[in-house]
Amino acid sequence: MRVIADLCIVPMGVGPSVSSYVKEIKAVIDASHLNAEMHANGTNIEGELSDICQLIEQCDARLSEVGVQRVFFTMIFGSRRDKEQSMADKLKAVS
View 1 (spheres, rainbow, N blue to C red):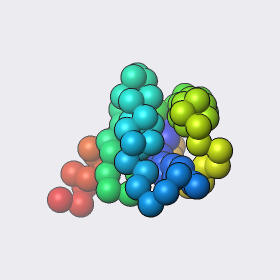
View 2: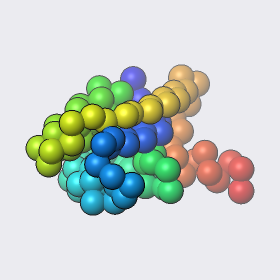
View 3: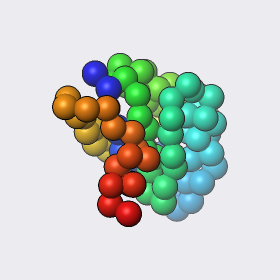
């Protein structure tokens, strides 16, 4: 199933700044074959749901490797069955 996801990953218990951990997550996402766009509170990703879920597991594993013991995830998925639609298509429709 093809989806557009809105993903927010928050490392917990690492202090007030999480930017170094977000950089780790960004590197994992950038290395994937998925189309992703970071925004101020997370990342939009488009692709097959199974690929996105695998990517989320890779992000969690990377955070574990760098010592993060607790992670808070929020994920929102949207899918259309009547036509293919990209993130760019959705933004263009409201411009």
